[in-house]
Each structure stands twice: as C-alpha cells, then as structure tokens.
Image (cartoon, rainbow, N blue to C red):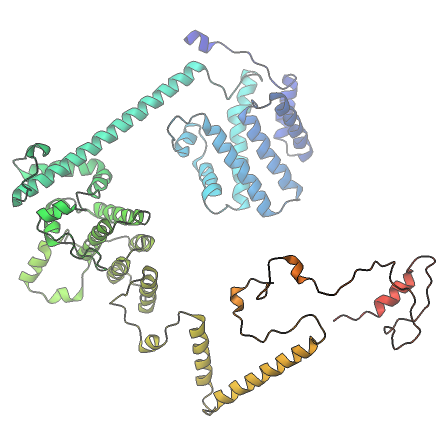
Length: 575
C-alpha cells in the first residue's frame, strides 16, 4: 500500500509542453498588463481542456491577476474593484481550505494556519462575507500577499517537480489516513465533552441531594435509588466542584442554567416551601430567599470575577434565546438571578449608615461581598439585546451601579424608550410636569409644540393673534382652491375639495379608481396620424401661433422642411 502511494502517477495536462507552462508563469507575474492578459487567455484555454478538473491554484491565480489587470486599466470604480477583489479572495480561502475539511466543520483560521496562510487574510475573507466591506487598499494588499503565497507554495514547486505534478491531489492512502485521524479526534473530543457534562451534572445533583438532606426536604414519593449515595462531608463535594470549575467553568455554568438547578422546577419550589405562582409575571423579579440560600454555599465558593462575568453573560444569552420560544417561569428566574448578582455589587449611599447587625444580616445573603469591576458596556448591551417585561427593572439596576454613569437625561430617555418597547410602566421613571401634560409621541403633538413655541417667541402678539392667523390661513386656502379650480375649468380633471385621507392611497391612485389601467383614458378622444392632419394654415394671424408665418402647403413633397421646423420651435409655448 505504501509502495503504491509513493509511486509517481501519470496524468494528462492541458498545456502543450513545459515551455508554455514557463511562459504563462512568467507572464502572470509580470508588471505588463498586456502580457498578463495573454497569460489569462492561455489559462482560459486550459480550463476548456480541463473541463471541471483545472487545478485550484491555477484558477485562484487567474482570478487574482484578472483583478489586478482591471484595477490598472482604470475602467472600474473603487466599489466595483472592492467587490471584484472580495470575490477572488473569498474563493481562494474557500477552495484552498476545502480539501482539509472533514465531516465536521473546522475553523478556517486553523486550516489556514496549517497551510501557512496569514490569519489576517482569513479575517479579510470574514469581513467580505459577514461584515462591512474592507477598503480598496486592504484588498490590493491581500491580493498581493495571496499571489506571493501561490507562487511560493504552488508554482515554484511545479518547477522543481515537473510541470505535470498535480499539486491539489493527494494519494488515496493519505486521504484515508487523514479521514480516519479526523474521525478518531472528533470521536474522542465528543466523548470527552460528554463525560465532562455528565460529571458536572452528577456533581450538581449530588450538591442538591446534600442540601435537601440538610433541610430534610425530600418529597416522600421520590425514590431514593434515583439519587447518588450521600457524601459525608459537604466541604469535600464543594472542593470537587471547585476543581471542576477550574478546568471547565464554562460547562459548569451551562449545566447550572438548565432547568432543575438555578431555574427550579415546580416540585423543587414546593419542596423548599416556596409558592410557584408567586410573582411569576412580576416586572421586578426577586428570588425567593429559600432558593437563594439553597445555592449560596456553591456560589460563594465560585464567586471569582471571571466566574461572575461569565455567569452574567450566559444569563443574558439564555434570556435572549427565550425570545424564540417564550417561557414565563424560566424568564422570571433568569431575570431574578441577574438582578441578584448586580445588586450584590452595588454600593448605595444608605448602606453607610447601617449598624453592624444590619450589615451582617445583609451580607449573609449575598453571593459576594467585595465590589467587582464589571464590564458595564457589555452588560448594558446584553441587557438591551434581550428585551422582556423585566428589562426596565434590570436596566435601572445597571444604570444605578455603573462606575461612570450616563447623564440623568440620557438615562431617563433610555428607560422611557425601554418601557415603551416592552409595553411596561416603569415606576422609577418620573418625567417633568411639562412632559406629563404633553408627551411627544405623535406628529400632531410635535406640530402643537411648534405652534406653542412660536406663540411664546413673540410675546407682543395679542390673544386674538392666533384667531386672526387662523382666519387668514382659511381665506388663503379658499382663494388657492378657487384659483386652482379656475385653471382646471374645461379640463377633464377636477379639483378634489373633499376631506380624503390620502395617506391610505398609494401615489398615483385616487379614491374610487379601479385597478384597470384603461380608467385613466379620457372618455372622448380620437386618433389621427400625422399624414391625415390638415396641412393648410390660414393666413389670419389671430389663429396662427406667434412667430410662425402663415403658409399654404400642398400635399406634394415632404410635409415639413428644416425652416418650417425652426419656425415651429420658435412659436412653441410651454405650460
């Protein structure tokens, strides 16, 4: 098998001989656009001979060189060139890394790194595909780097191994071996992930069992065989969980946020003595004290800044996922845990005057005591990305605790917009008396405010000034309507004086008009060709157009000559 894979295989190529190959290579990397066009024509001929089996590197090189030729020609705009370069670069990264992909998708950056392709080229491809288009400068730079990579990794190697060597192909044995390795790696990775998940779940279930035994809260109908064997020492179990969190705290938080752990089931709430229906739809969610104290030993042991940051991030992510399939019970407890974590971090002014006993009682039920420097911009963005009935409350808690708070007016507007979006009334928002009298939500209120400001800007006007202005406006509008009606007199069109809500009709359509286009035709009309029209003009100047001399024409010869057309143009009136 190894001997067969190591043998040199013979295959048919599209070029005539090695001299043609060398010429095309030299012309492709030439600075002369005419030589590059010749090389592109030869590659087009190769493609027609190859059908669908042209080497990938040859195709990518031709695409990138074509971009350079069109760029130097000056016939395309900058945006067109960016799109052209983008298509060539995206095609290069996809085709070059395609053969390394197995049955499971692998990151392009890793595959490109194995081929010594610069990572920023893959990022450039990502920007073309998913983000804002890069500038033309970066496109040209990426094209140059990729052409150098192709020359070094493909074209130069063909010179050493013969022009007929297939750079894209690999032996069957090597392909099978790589596929087997990928399958084994994927299987091992999946097995490790499954074992880690089961271990995290078993540890948390064991923690719940120990807590239920400590409070004697097991339901009577639950079979004890379903629970793991009890641990003699809770500290040993907490140590196991802490060790697991060091290795994979991300997976531990994912399991914690599943139903049955931080989001309790109805049976668990009844076991803890909590009412499952209490505050289920509250806009200011608050955790039951029994549930908080149930998880406090575990959370206090894991309350590092990194853990708290990741917990907040995943809580908001889970809350955002509920927008697709809403669950009031789960949304309430996710929001309540977010509120609890942020409230543990606040340092309000009223806490400075509490007694030692009050401080001790308050700290007893807190997940962490020392203030943590949270990433407030990320927390604020995550909160706004997951709108729900609790968002105004969570937003208020975040804005109150920020290290560098926003201006008061900005916070009020943000809270008001959030309340409008979520259709909730925010209790802490207190607008000014003027805003209460006249909220600016509609176009009519804006017009009223504008008229009010104009009246106040001219204090010398009397009280009768608005009445006089309204009367004058009515007179002006009546005169304008009469003038327009006079202009349309004798016309098939007429002026509409009815009160019609024109916003309900699309542009170009009137009330009562049918969808048949023939309804726009006039009732009395006739068709007449130019040759059928009378050609004799009366000599009376009263009936002739200004500037056009009357002339008697016969039907013999051409209908109009050049001088007649000029006289007609001089007598035209535009209206």
